[in-house]
Amino acid sequence: MTETASASAIAPSRTVAVVGTGTMGQGIAQVALVAGHPVRLYDAVPGRAREAAEALAGRLDRLVEKGRLDTEGREAALARLHPAEELAELADSALVVEAVLEQLPVKQELFGALEGVVGEDCLLATNTSSLSVTAIAGALRHPGRFVGLHFFNPAPLLPLVEVVSGFATDEAAATRAYETAKAWGKTPVRCTDTPGFIVNRIARPFYAEAFAVHEERGADPATIDAVLRECGGFRMGPFELTDLIGQDVNEAVTRSVWESFFQSPKFTPSLAQRRLVESGLHGRKSGRGWYAYETPGAPSKEAVRPEPHTAPPAKAPAAVTVVGDLGPARELVAMMTEAGIDVTTVNEGGPYIELPGDGQLVPADGKTSVEFADVVYFDLALDYRGATRIALSASEDTSERAVTEAVGLFQKLGKEVSVIGDVPGMIVARTVAMLVDFAADAVARGVASPEDIDTAMRLGVNYPLGPVEWNRRLGQDWAYDLLSALHERCPTGRYAPSLALYRQAYAGDEETGS
Image (tube, rainbow, N blue to C red; front, top):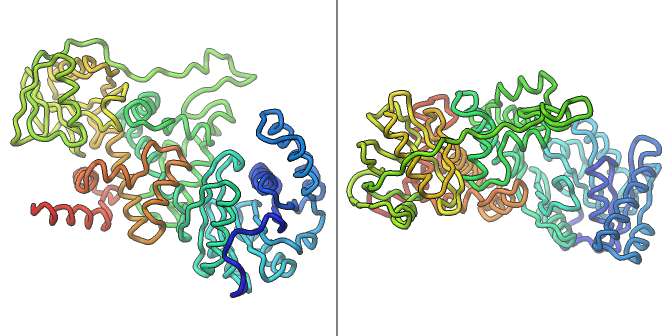
C-alpha cells in the first residue's frame, strides 16, 4: 500500500475480488455485492467461478423472497457480478479477499501471483482462521498492504469480522480494511496476529473445561451442556456446539492453537475428542458425535437426546444461616427470604450457607468437597434469579442429609438441580475463570483491546457476557483465587493464573489495603 493511499473505506465503485468460491468465498462475495461493489469471482478450478456466480444469483433470489432485497437491487447486484477465468482479470481490484485451502504454501503462492497482477493501492486480505497472517505475507515484496479479514460462517448473517494485523502490516492498511468491513454493515474488531486471533484463542476453555469435567467422570455431556446453558447463560453447551461445528473441525482448531503456542498446557487438546475424531464420529454431519442424530440410515429412536441428570424432589430446609459475603451469589439471600426460608446472617467468616444438619453450602472456589467435613459446593450462575438449573457437587464422604438439604433449598428457589462429582471449580465457575484469564492475558499482550475482545466473544460465539465484563462483575480477585486453588490441585500449569490476572488481583488488594 502506498504512503498516500487513503485509510478510509474502499469506495463502493471500486472492484472487490474474491478468490475461492466455496461457502465462505460465496458468502464474502455476497456481502460485497449487497454493499454495492463490482465483484469478481475467481477459482483455480475451471468453471467453478461461473458455478459460484449462479449460486450467488440463487442467494440473491432468496433475499428477495425474504424481503431483504428488492428486485431492482437484485438485478443491479447481478450486473456487478463477474466470474473470472484468469487471475489477470482481477487487475482493477481495490481489494482481493482469499478464501482458499488452509495450506500455507497454497496461500503464499496465490498472493505472490496476485502481487504481479493488481495495482499498488490494492489491499490484499486473507480469510484464514488458523494460519499466521504474518507467515502468509512473508513471501510478498510489499507485505505492508496485507491483512487478515476473518469472517465468520455464514458471512452474510454473522456480523463479526476480525481485522488482523500481521507483523509487517501498515497501520493505514489495517484501518482501511476495518473501515471497509464497517461500511459493509459488519462489526469489525482489530487484533494482532496471534494464534486463533481473538475468538478461537479465547474460546478454547469453553470446550476444554467441559471435556475435562467429562474425562474426570464428573458429569455426562448432556448434564454439562444443560448446566452451561441453564445456569451459565450460554446459548449452546460445548458438546452440542462441537457436534454442530464438526468434531474434526473443532479439534483441528484446538490442536493448531496448541501447537502454535508451543504445546502450552493452557491449550492442551482433549483426548476424548481425539478419540471421537479417530472413530469418524464428527457430529451432526456424520450422524453421531457426542450425541446421536437422525440420518437416512439410522432409526430415530437411536437419535433420542439423553436427558441431563436432575435430582428428585427434596424437602427444603426451613431455616439457614448465611455466613460471610456470598460474593457473586449474594442475591441468594433475598431469594431465600422471598421463598419463605428463615435466613440469619453472620457477617464474619464464610462464605457459606449453613444448613440445619450442620452441612455447609459453599460457592465454587476451585477446591474439592472431600477436603472438608461436610461441604456441598454450588456452581456460579450468570444470573441466580434467571437461572433455571444449578449444579451441586459433593464427595462420597459428604452426608446424604447435607446433599438432600442443598438440593431441596435450590428446588425451593425454583431451580432444577444437577448433582455432579467432586470436581474442583465445578462447571460454569472454572469455565468462566479460564475465559477471564485468557482475556486478561490477551489484553496484557496487546492482542486486542478489552472492548474488542468482549465484542468478539459476544458476536462471534454468542457468549452472554464478554469475559472482560464478566471479570468486572465478579470482582478482581474472583478468577485469580479460583484458578490458584485449581492449580494447587491440578499442578500441570493449565490452571496457573496468568501474570495479567495476578497483577489485577494484586492491584485489587492494594486498593482495599488487604
